[in-house]
Length: 256
Image (cartoon, rainbow, N blue to C red; front, side, top):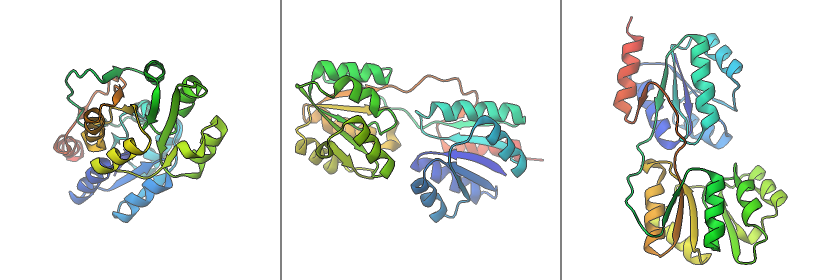
């Protein structure tokens, strides 16, 4: 049995490959929509956040031989909890990390290392600012940008009730909320930029599979400033950016 944290579309594909090679896998996600996607693919799944202790108890109860962490590149708490849980349970921790973006210098591309820096950069640039960073850190941007007469703040996020409630609590106007489920095509990104007269787009460096590169490219081609939040730095230990590496490591671990 393998316990696997999933948070991206490629994580689902990796879980399927692990299952197809004859290894039992229990996947774990935070939201019901993500759970439905995994369940529909034929994968066992549990839903909800786990503390370190709860994760240790779960992997011990399930007899898990390893923890595979394929959660989102920005899920820092999940990474830390999984590494510590593996350590306490005495089983290997394996990180699957999406291939990062390779980007060259561009006068409209602003690379920053935190959400606060991103908000400050957007505040300096002003104009119609579109956030594509989700709801979790929305308060950082509303704190810096809402109320500035030279800034229109538009937020794109998943169409969930808790997200809409958070927008309301933070003072986001309904007309500035894009509640849509991705992935988004290049044409859809371009249409949204034009509709909201976007001059600044804020995004995270989630990797090629996350369609970030297309989102950035289409924005730059339209003359839009892009504020790109780089990935958090972390020491994962055993980490792979290809499925073959994870599968090979699991084979090594599971061989009697």
